[in-house]
Length: 197
Picture 1: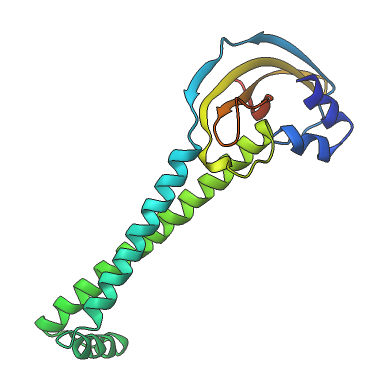
Picture 2: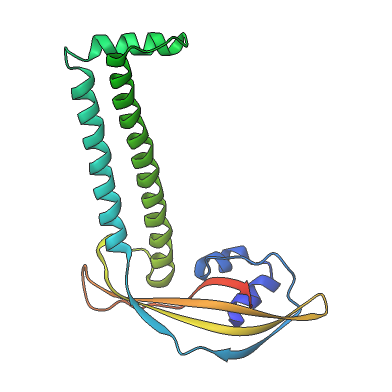
């Protein structure tokens, strides 16, 4: 906590980004630690996040493959071309073309949904990898490390512009094993700093 506010005061972005996920955009004149919560332990989530992203990618590729196989079917692709032509001109669909249009739209909707899910899952992996790296340092096998995440809330009074305001700082530490050796040396990382209430 001292390090965090010291780095803020000195405007030392290098130091801040080496152990904090969040910056703070107000000038803190003073701070006081009111209390430190008991802390919680949860399983490390990075391996599961990596697995989920990979599974979603497999689903997305399978949907693409199924769409291509369907779209290249000799009974389908001439109708697919006609359907696109009618749709581009705003014409009325016959029943058989409407069935093709519905199936095409379903594939497209599923593709968009899966692409977004893959993108979100990969972003979650990258965010968590950064969290882990801040706590245990860069390591080659970071995605496969298992262990526990320790979290702790610190209640603070921050003096901002002459006003004392209550805030909560969440600290996180990754106690991980795996890869090349024994348990890694971990440090606390500032995860968030938000107004209390």
